[in-house]
Length: 292
Ligand SMILES: [Zn+2]
Image 1 (spheres, rainbow, N blue to C red):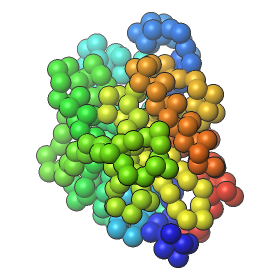
Image 2: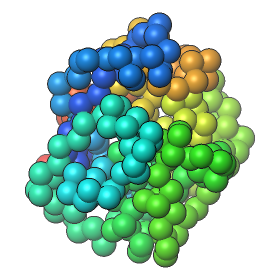
Image 3: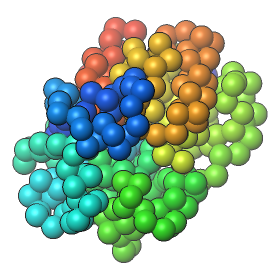
């Protein structure tokens, strides 16, 4: 590829409000999830709830869709009982009227109807919040994540079906297939979104069973990997340190693979959903974002 054949015009990030979580959630921690969840007395400073926006010649692609503002305005958004208690101890959201997905897109010069494809890294609430607005788009999620939604007690795993499996959405379930590209090693399976190698979905399970990351490769730009909630801090990931939520063995494997990719892809920028440094990392001089 030469610079003139770059199929991507722009990569941007918006945040749909902010979230405070427990320091143990960011990790690393030796404590059991339910122990820290019910004993932690501290919250982190507010962190972003990032939605990445990729303007590709085949359409505008979102990676994650943020947290729905209804979650802070509608008293019935969350389940009651023990799950409601767990959700309230896990995260505190703040979303102003001008921090919705639509408002963020509009500041970048896009309308919600410009979105052709939304890739959902995983189905937790702070990644699926834009779904009610995306009936016109293709929604992509991994088959494994979809299966997890349809196993018993999804709410116990942080999946609120009533906000996910909405009528009229165009779900596309992807199963990672063998990759012919040796430069992606140690990833051997994935999904080339538009068949041009610019946007490759890579399985990075652990936070949830079907979590996906998105590798963005453009001529003349540093490669980017959007990792969802595989980490909450790119520096911790680089040190091999794991968050406090998820399957530790799977996360260790996925973090190891991303770090192996960092070694073979110079300048690879790791962008997480709730990393306070992500927006700055995206716009460093290494990866210039053309002005609109
Ligand atoms: Zn999240």
